Length: 383
Image (cartoon, rainbow, N blue to C red; front, side, top):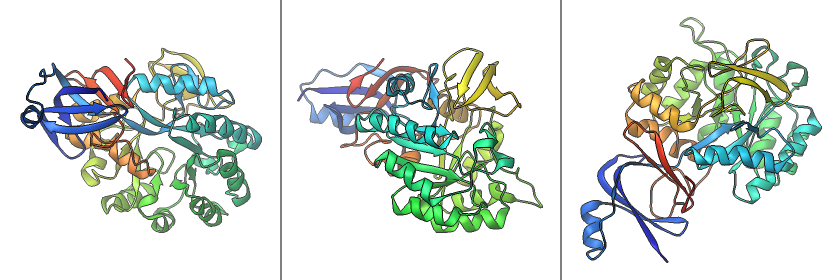
C-alpha cells in the first residue's frame, strides 16, 4: 500500500510536535512521529516538503446545513451537498441536525439522512426538537413543539435504523424522564437544551446522563447566568468542570461573546465541544434562506428569523477554533481538542477526532492563521 508523508507543525489533542510527520496508508493513519524519528525509520525516503500546520479533521456534532443546502430535507442528494460543503472546509466528520417540524416530516427527513449515514457521508443524526420549551424555542416553530413522548421517540429511533445519535430535550417538560430512558436504552445520547429549567431541575436531569450527556449550545436557548439565579448555565458548567457532561459552545462571537466562551474553557477545557449550529447560509452571502419550515434572513453574516431570534451559524468549525485561539486566548491544543476529540467522544465516534495511528486519515493543512489550505478525508484529498 502506498504511503503518503505529511510534515509540519502538528497540533494534536494532547500537545504539539513542532516538526513532525503524519504517515497515511490508505484510509488510515499509519504513524505520527517527530521528524527526527521518522527520518530514522525511513533512511532512504525523500524528506517531505514542510506544511505550516497540520490539524486533525474537525468533528461537528450540531450542524443544520451549509453551502446553500440544508439537512432538513427528504432529498439525500440535497443533504449530501450540505455535507460536502463542510467536508471541503475541514469538518471531515459531522452529525446532521434537524429542527422541529411536523411529526411525519421529521420522520421522513430522518429516513433520508439515514441513507447518508449508511454511505459514510455523515456520522449520524441529531434531532434538536420537537421536545423543547416554548419559552426558549429560539428559531424553532412553537406551534410544532410537543411534550417528550416515548412513543414518538421510538418512531424516530426506528426511522433512523441505528443512525440517531442525539436528541435535544427540555428536562422540565412532562414525559422527559420516560423519553430519556427510551432514548438511552437505544444507545441515543440525550442532550439538554432549549430549556427554562432552574438550576436544581437542570442539575437533577444531568446527573443520570453521566459523561454520555450533552448540553445543547450552552447559554443559547436557556435563561442567562445570574449570580442570584444561576440557572442551567451554572448547573452545566459545574458538571462539565467535573467531567460529567459535554457542553456545546457556538463560539462565533455572535451567539456568545468570545470572553464568555473563554471563561467556559477556563472552567472546563476538556468538556467543551465547539459546534457551528450552521444552517444553509454557512459559507454563503447575505440573503434569505430556510431553516426547516422557517424563513431566515442573513444580514452582515448573522442569521435571524422574522421574530429576531438567532437562527444558526453561518461559518465553519475551523473558524471557531481560530477565533478562540486568536481572540479568546485559549491554548491552541485546547481549542483543537474542543473541535475534534471531545465532540467525537461525546457521541461515541471512535475512529475520528485525533491524529493517531489506526484512526481515519482525516487531516487539515492550514496556514499559520489556521486558514485551510488542503483537506484530507479518509485518505482522499478534497481540496
